[in-house]
Amino acid sequence: MKVTVLGSGSRGNAVLIESDGVRLLVDAGFSGRDLERRLAAVEVDPSSLTALLVTHDHSDHTRGMGVAARRWGLPLYLTDKTRTVCRDLLDGSEEVRAYSSATEVEIGGLVVTPFLTVHDAVDPVAVTVTERATGEKLGIATDLGRATAPVRHALQGCDILVLESNHDEILLRESPYPWSVKARIGGSHGHLSNRAAAELVRELHHDGLCAVILAHLSEQANDPALAHDVVAEALGRRYRGTLQVATQEHPLEPIDVSAKRTARLPVQTTLF
Image 1: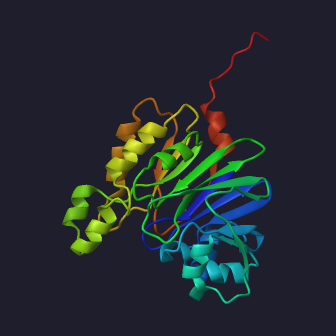
Image 2 (image 1 turned 180 degrees about the horizontal axis):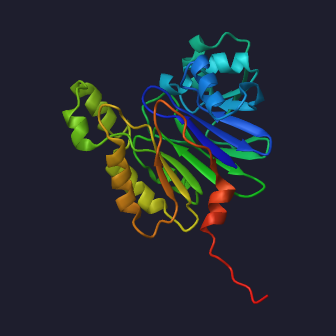
Image 3 (image 1 turned 90 degrees about the vertical axis):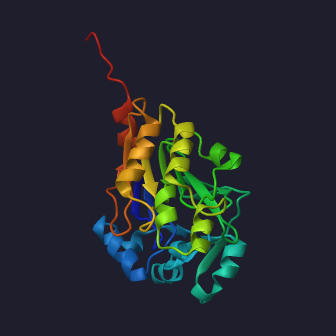
């Protein structure tokens, strides 16, 4: 399985997962033109995409979903409530496939397991994506509100974790946002702070975790180096994987999960 964060932040989010001929896009929070540009930057033809799954109704996750579904003929996976709220982005010609947090979704050799979050959207979910052939598991959790027990359970055992580290609590207080926005972001239905993300990553750490990508950083109330350092300190020396911060403007380099897992295996010696 290969994972590419095409961009993440308050102005747009999208993650590409590739596996044995399947190319699944999770969220489409950029315009159709911008999605096409980002895919071209990682040498992916949009017409080769297999499906698009949207996690919730906020525009930084849905902006380009209708255009992408129509232009590239993609099956569009939405919960019923999200579809209703986002009806203005659709013209009825899309192939919409309903899903819910109660059932897994199989897309080729990928198994998508949605789970509820307490983010302030109409029907918000985060997802894990597991490659059936290898068992490789990706967690995408960029709009959590808070790390509930079901969220912590669902994200156990991930090989790669894309996790929001939205704001620094002090920078949020000092930011130019109105107080109502500050309260919403820092509240239990908003976004995780760097400290909360670090606590969750510390809990989710296991020997097989090979990559952590910090996502959905606030441009007004966070700093990439600060987010990185807070989570790195929580992981400590026991963590032997990589830690990256996703950017709003450009895709990250694709991560080959199998290669990351292999790199973490101990060197085996032989007598022959």
